[in-house]
Length: 413
Image 1 (spheres, rainbow, N blue to C red):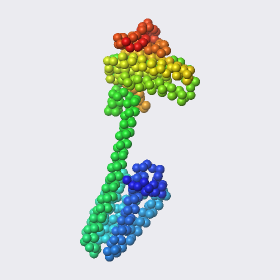
Image 2 (image 1 turned 30 degrees about the vertical axis):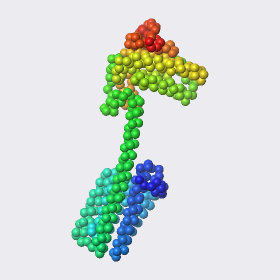
Image 3 (image 1 turned 90 degrees about the vertical axis):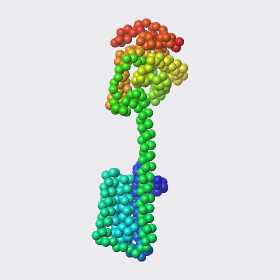
Image 4 (image 1 turned 60 degrees about the vertical axis):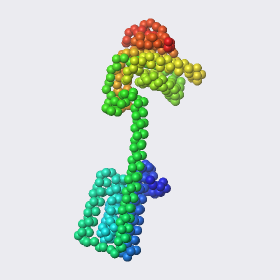
């Protein structure tokens, strides 16, 4: 709204160039209005003098001296609030003094109306409380001017009617112009702020959807909490890299994070493509689930297809990783289907998680898997056997669970 050179000049001279662009704009605008009011008062008095009226220099002098002292204090101490409130008082008092010295409402061409710039400016540069107080002070000043004229009587001047008309028009035009540009600046800043809020809201929504499933994110935004839910059937997948803990000790921190991110980023893309929900990663272990929070009949099929893509991705990069690190990143994948409980835990750094025997069994099945294989339970096999080629492995003991029938998935039929 204001020229950049003017903002740079004022902000450097008064030492507020470190503030935000919005605050620099406000403070520069306030200083500019002060300069304009000083020039207006001097020009107003000079015009009356040129038409044969006394030159009431003291109003301009008092305002100018008080303003210069206030500016000097502002530059020295940087207390903008004190400076602002002092100028609001002066902005109300100066037009009142000018009106009294120039012969009342008609004689001064209603110059007291310029005091309205004080509450209007307070809306821009101060809070609602200060602006409201300033507005009541303005109303009091307006009524005081009317009472003074009624009691003391006006001292009419001998200016021609057309000059009074011109001054009336000028006063109204000046106040309207300042009011318009103040409101225009306010609306521009408001629009900019709303655009910023919308952008931040979009970023927050994106982050929320990256952390939680869509349905969970919606419930969290609407209710501020998420109720735990039981699901009769869901398919859980675990993966980990064979011998990764020993390999990780040979890498720098940057290399370790880079390699984990390389694989898990690809796994994330695969899960998104099949409509599955990533739950979490723990070290080199990756966990996801299908069929929640929105149930689908195909969750087991989708999970097995995703597992086949994960295995293929790892195989495709095996030789390259061997040449780089002498480590193949061989992966184990375990899948089981059954009931789970899902919910959001924590009051800070909240996380969407799942619990239940199904999760434990899926983890045990992954641990019982051989490198570069996809190991599934009987429960999952019963749902996908007509579409995938599976090889029965037999019954294997799983810690804390007992024996579990397991199958290797070779590919789609």
